[in-house]
Image (tube, rainbow, N blue to C red; front, side, top):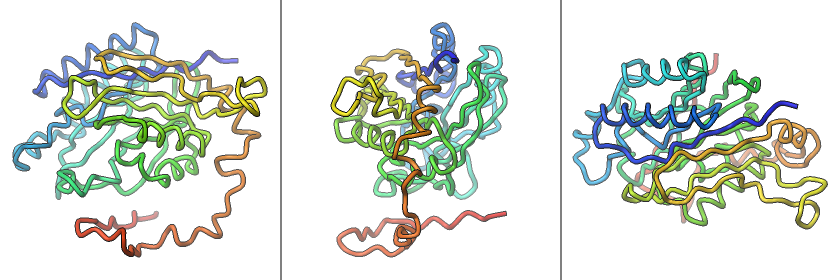
Length: 304
């Protein structure tokens, strides 16, 4: 039996500058390492603190940084120094419009995953972003062994397809950087995604000192039932951690052995699906009352 995987959620407020966010992010990662974390996760778009609203588009798009630039690379170097994986987030400079991106470095400082937010908030300022086109999963080498990790970013969680395709791609753990109020309904979405896919989900939000956010970062372990569970039919609370609204580094311990054993016999995930009946899910047709003038169609990714 391996020890649990320790996940740190860096529920911290931005400083207002790139240099300040770099320095504060480094301090938060060091604190996570002191707490024994195997993975540290930032809130959404940490490089500029998700400072998009109420500003001219040309101002915040100019704050985009290169995915191979100094800001991002600094966290790769830090991951190697701390022997800890780091999921850092940024407004990424990209031809055609910036992207909302997560980069996951392993404990050796190697980039293992780059995820670009697919479901950009096109009803708001994110319509100026370039959306992602796929949901990749990586095998992350941690001190407790390999873990299959994917990501969603904020609004992605509101679409069951996001977590479903990550599960089908093999994800055991989904990292979710966030920047919005995590109220009862959004928390319920995360619980549902974890339940229906038997997948652990770790979400990091900004604290309530950040306008429009309220903390409530969470970790759900994806294990809804156990033979000795306290509830009816062995049910149990999947929530390992729910932070308050304060600014802090919060940690949770994920029992991977328990999750993997559970996935071998329970009925959710891909065990009893009927994909042969789900063709309509791949249709691009949108009928009333769901027609929206600002909806974008994302081209299918090229397949090699």
